[in-house]
Length: 123
Image (cartoon, rainbow, N blue to C red; front, side, top):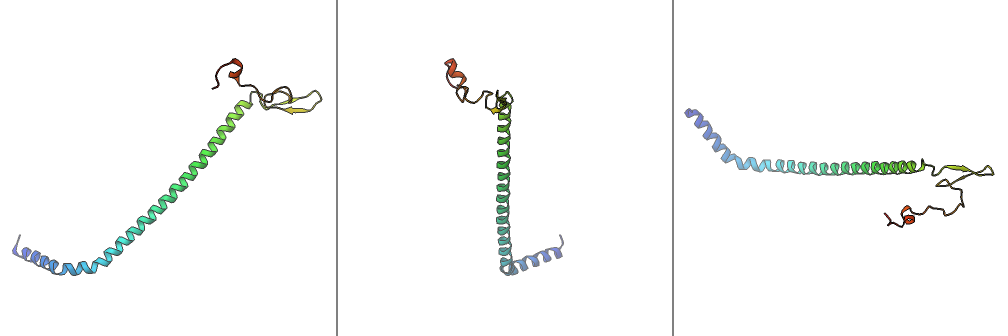
């Protein structure tokens, strides 16, 4: 390095040492303002993320509710396809609807549990 470069570097170093505290004092409010803006942006980001998470949870709950309702309807429909809930005609021409294909009044309203007739333990 040449002597001129050392002189320039020394002058800049001395200027920084003398002017550094003044520059820092003048830039401190700007730095504080930038930090406050960053804090506000981080808060807004947290709020928006919480809103997005709540919307996602609501969507999940709705989808789960519909899924369970559809699965229940499919299960009921599958058991109903074997004659349960079908209409039977009476001798007088009227129709009676029962849950297991029997006429109303033909015995107990619900069938006994399949294991109780065999003497086995309930499921």
